[in-house]
Image 1 (tube, helix red, strand yellow):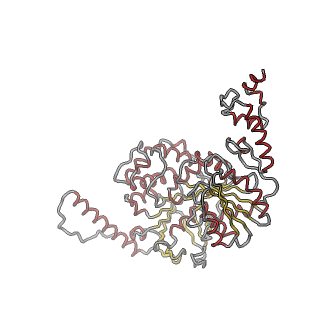
Image 2 (cartoon, each protein chain N blue to C red):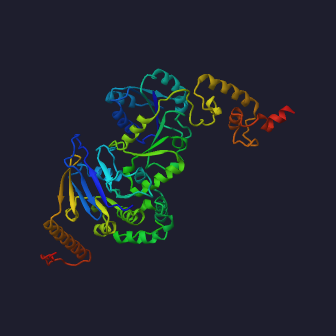
Image 3 (cartoon, helix red, strand yellow):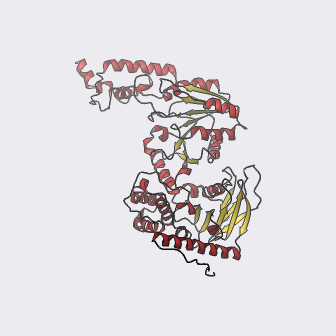
Length: 261
Length: 264
């Protein structure tokens, strides 16, 4: 089945009041930001989407896929799952090697015949983390950044879901642009919980959350995209200076001009 | 009356999940909650205070809590048979027993961060529903793998992902409780208890003090006849296991070579 559209019907906020919108439609290829203070219900919204909620979660939201109520199989059968979820978690708990873990997950997702992908998955994880992962390493000894990079690569290659949920990718200590690029391939629907202004402004629209409810839907303007570009430049500049300092250089010349978009 | 048995190891989040379930159900149903524990618990008092339902605790002390549970079930059920729901919470302590009975609903709350599903035994294999708790602590990939492993151990379980802190998933449990049939008739344990010394220890599923005693008497007689050498010549691991098989009618007692020698 091709996922063309996801529709969110309103639920209730923390006080039990109905959310103030009729329906929210997101089309394939769109990237949606989810912003708001801590505890405003951002992760809960991702959770509702992951569960393809049908009024059976605390918020009572309902999620439709292609205008239809998704079958229970989409939720429970990992081989049919259409949602990939990068959680905030930085560590694995299973005592096994990276290679075996990926093998078992390929099996779980019904892709046991694609074992040759394992090398590629680890290579692409290593493009996102500064510290390379080896396939024989134990999952438990991976650093936070390595674990997160492996989770990203696993999501991109093993889960291959048309809908991707990403929870605060900026906290992972990994190359977030590369990670996002890997995850948000063409035609996917991406939901991105973030506090990073550059990531938030680089979306098609953003949902503003407050006390459990979606309170505003803001379409990203051209000016905002320009500002995102500028912030990007500043960030790269910071990284450049950081690298110079690490290499023992003096930093006395200030760059002021950013390339126009 | 509907009987719902919640099992799960200490710290798996049983009580937290149960609280959300009770909160959802208390408006529409009358209920009684019993907590089986070994040494001490305040959960009965806390739940009573918060939800204003009738509760009690049963402390097993030196008895195996699951043996104790089986002995107490008939009395408790008789006493509260007018309630809509009878909720039992118990920790499966040695993981060799199953606290669930053939009727009603057996719900295991399992802590996804604590060990492999294959190490849980009847507490898991006999559950109707497995509430996978604390899934918010690990990645989606690990959750998916865990699911597959759980189904490998108990292919018939209905899996529900719960969160004892936020209450997520409790509505699915509530739905199952609302849809279950009333619990009527004679109860038996879903799985026999391990071999040891009392009536249950000769392996049975009877929840009836007199029948348990009768079986104990028969078992004791056999026990006196047998050499108790656990030699394994009969094909069973221990003499107790052999006694159990004889009592179950699976094997003749003459299969024991020592009994034959004595007779000659």
